[in-house]
Image (cartoon, rainbow, N blue to C red):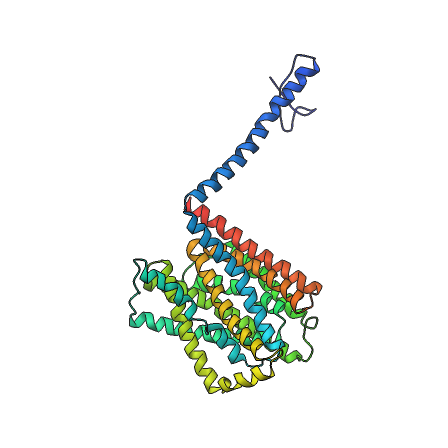
Length: 384
């Protein structure tokens, strides 16, 4: 074995194997021998990945994976459906922001039904309601009611595809409020996602003339855009405060406790929204809206019912993913539902998809991917 350098004897040197035999068969054998380690390493890596996946699957019972699949499916179908139903409400003659925001929390008994098996068949018992915990539930309920009202204003003036893209900025506010309130670490990938997603929202704002519905003024479009951003910011604040309640007050994470939190917050939001609905006189307006609704009263009732059901199912799915998996997976699914909603809105409502909106969509998904990959990598590094 000799060490050969470049022509002048300097530069990088490589180990070269001298073969004394001149037969072609022996040369082929040497080539095959030298390529075996690379092939083996690829096979070993593939085998390790398969073994790791199999080990992960076997570490949990089948019921766990079935529940996780159902939770993921609920997020990817219920949330986009809720957004599309909000736009359908306005397209078919609905006009009350209070009624639409009320329908989102009117389904609060649905998660309560999921709690009953834990109490009746399991060993779980209701969490004692202290004055401090009740105060937190009331605060989160009030903020949720305000958040739903802001999004109701946004969908009144924005196409569903545009509203969903702007609402993706909630990840930015979740990262910021999580850092400030819960002291979550803010990784470089988080900062990159904040910049990228903000750029996507700015692109939508600059292209506001391309997707404005007929009859919507520039002032109304701008108002809808502002309410969408404010609603996303409030959504991020609610997410951080909810995590703070789990960490500081409840001190434990179990699925029935998470469901209790959802039920209580939704109930408080329902109470606040019902008061607003009564003060605004919209309980009586429901009958007038139903009478003038396109396709009749039955269609109006179906939109209201399914708006309540899909919103609660989406939140239930998100709760299940957060509890069973991680915030990273929930964020990934949240990123996936943005293009799902946009594409469905373009097909169903014929929302215009300009080049700027497509660019904003790509940038938004890129920002989500950057956040999730970076957050997951940093988490694995810290645990190792």
